[in-house]
Structure formats: structure tokens, C-alpha cells
Image 1 (cartoon, one colour):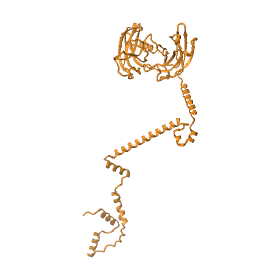
Image 2 (cartoon, one colour):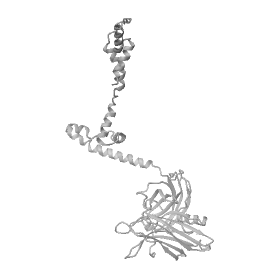
Image 3 (cartoon, helix red, strand yellow):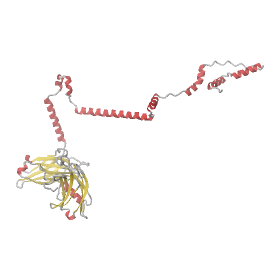
Length: 446
């Protein structure tokens, strides 16, 4: 039988102390019995202490001891064994829960800060009148203000709001009015404007002025567009035939717009002059501050807007009109929508010589067409023709009603004339632009 590790260790220990083994003792006894020389007496070995054996066995015990796991890893392994989820999966789940808690805390903190700022901004000097009921009438009388004081405070707040609105500078306009009693003609001159706000990215504007009379607005005039300026000088005169008996019921309107080729023109402001408040017996020349427009874009855009491109090739004598889209059209049907289509007509000397139309778009106020039409117009006639584009609401049973129109040509004015001249100045190149629809003429064919 092989000796155990403990026996080997004890054997080594005896050898280190020169203690004879059992075999050596037996051999010495045999030699004495045979008469041989007696071996020298060995000093008695020191007593074996249990501590020395334990000290010898200590390395063995330390090598075979099992290292205990940290508590966290032990818990993770137990959870993994019970849920059959790997340890890395449990770690990811815990990280996700931690991130979710952090997000919730951030949202709550942000909401609290926002409410605190709002209370700090709007609650200065405020009193919670609803919470005063639990404190009794005596305290309520001391804290709650009288109705007269509340009314005074409301009037003061309204006055502050009006003053803030007045502080918003929109610029001012200079004009001249001259009424001829013999010919019943009102001559309106748009002289200049100054200190207009910059609505373009460059910090400037492209202003022009529309002039018309309320309430009919049938006849409108427009000035030329002045590029990249906040102080345009117009010096343009427009005439209105109005009998003196009717002129006191009219209101003259100057509406200033910022021209934009690829989007709807933004209205900067307006000046309204009730003609019953001015003395038309003498020439009037004065400055007026521009005021903001009521509603989103005032009354100018109630019919809608249309975008189309023009391209003329002089050598071939071809005019190409591409109807792109329209938006914010007037509601014509009972359901609050329309069935719009667009008519394109070439006019010469007041007569329609050519016409075409787009497809019908059902139940929409923002139709998209992208339809192209080509007309053959020789170069010698392009200066004489007019292009009339009319948006019509289709009606299957009755008569189709026109919503609005745009007339372009050399006899046009304002943005329509500008679009036409840009087309002629850039042959073979399509020029796209937005236009505001105007009131259609009475008796127009549908």
C-alpha cells in the first residue's frame, strides 16, 4: 500500500530531526544481539508539538481551500439559474432599468423647473382667491382686492399690451391724395416707405404696394417691386373714378407686401384711410405708420394662391405654361371644400383666341397639378397677348363658379408684370412664381 501524504511529511520531519525510523531501530537491535559494537546513543528527540504538524499541514490546507464568490456574483448566478437568463442578459436588463429611471427623473425635473419658472414669471404678486375660503372671511377681506381695483388692474394690463403692440415697428408710408371734383377722379400717389422690417434671409425685403378701395376692391393697382431695400421710393400714381356722393363711404387701403418668387408673398403691413375723415377739397400729402394685418394674412389672401411657371422660346414661337399647384383656395362647396381646376386662356384685344384646362381635383383646397400646356405665339405677337389663368370650382349639376384669376402680359402691373418680363428676359428658361388670386370679372365664361 502506498504511503499517504501525511506519512511522507512525518518521515521528512523525522529525518530533519535525525530521529531513526522503525526499520533503523530494528537493524540496530539485531546488530547488538550479534555482539557488534553498540551504536552511539542519540539524543532524545524533542517532543512533537501539534502546532508543528499543523504548521506543516498548513500549506496543504491553504491550497485545497475553496475560494468563496463575492455576494453580488453569487446573487447574479442564483437569479440566472432560476430565470434561465444568462448573466450578461441580466446585466443589460439592469442597465436598461437604470437608464429608464434616469430619464424619468430628468423629465420630472424639467417639468418642475418649467412650472417653477412659469409661476415665478406670471405669479408675482398673485393671490390664490380659491384658497382663501378656508381661512375665513376676515382674512379674505384683508387679502382679496375690491372689484374696482381689479378693473383698474385689467385696464392697466390692456394698456400695457397695446403699448407693446405699438412698439412693434413696421415702418411708415408716405402718400398723396388729389381729388378732381370735375372729373370725379381720385389720384393716389404712393411716394415712398421707410424703416420697413427685413423679411428675407439677407435682412432686407422686396417691397411693393397694392392700392385699392373698400368695400368693393374690384379695381386694384400695384406698384413695381423694389429689390433688397427697406426704404423704397415708388413715386407711382393711380386713378380711381369715384363720384363725390359715394367717395365718403369708401376706405382707401395701402397694403405693403414682400415679394417672394417661390412662396406666398408676406404682407408687411397696411394703411387704411376712411375717406370721410379727410378733406378732399385740398391736396393731402402725409406720412402714416403701418399697422399689422388682421388675421393670418389679412383679407388679401381669402381667394387663395396659385403657382405656375412660364417659358417662351422666341425662335420656335412657343409659350409653355406649367400649372404646378394652388393652396388656401376659397371654400365653394357646402362641405367646406372645392373641386378646383385651372383654365388657361390666351387673350388678344379683349378676345380669347386659345384656351386649355387642367384636370379636376376633387374635394381639396390645396390641389397639385404639375400639368404642362404649350401655345404657339409668334414673337411679333407676344407683346400684344395676355395670359389669363383662372381657378374654377367644378359643379356637375349647375354652373361652375370661378374662384379667382391672374392676368399676365405687357399691360399687367405689379407681380404679374414682373413675372411676364422675367420670362421674356430669360428665353428658353422656365420661370416659376406664386401669385395671389384676384376677384374674377363678372360675366366670365366658365
